[in-house]
Image (cartoon, rainbow, N blue to C red; front, side, top):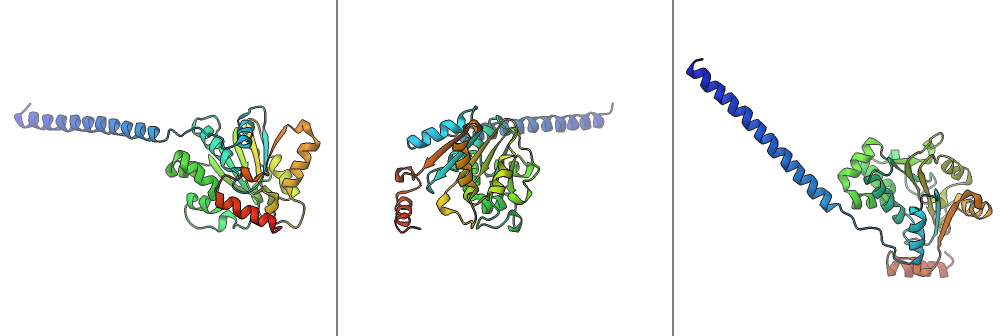
Length: 256
């Protein structure tokens, strides 16, 4: 072999070695980033702020209770608590999917009318729940989960015929579900799934019977349904802020 060939071989070998070294360095850097991400995302456990929240969280965590109905004042964490537990279960691999359901009669637009990315649409459509997800696992992870369908937003128009297994189902603003729509939601629940129906009957915009009111009635009438009910109807249950509590109590005194 010529001297030039030897030099070229060495140069090629050096290039090969440098690529391997750079690759190893990149792997180590990626590991450090991942470890840093995991460390940063070690979320604090969900801690109840009052006795009723403790009861609520207990029902949500109980594997023998598949359906929980939460009613009462705004700002009492009816949606926050299941959102935290759902996204934590998803992150730890205890469930495969999270479904978020909103009523068609809600004052918000249907999902398809919003522009932007899936994450932007989700934030517009169900910001309180999606923001909790972002707080727990980060915006990038939430966007990936939305894109893959692991987190799915289901408008009432397209829920019929679905079977929702191994998941959390969070139905928010259920006061604006009709009884017919309520039936569609509760009959979607499949195996190894937790269904949460959350709402405030005082904020119902329907001109017909609220599905949430019917769910409460049926839960009491048919104990074999095994539905747990939590009613955040005390002023002390409002934990969003003192100002919110004052406003809600003032509206109640006004009969509004």
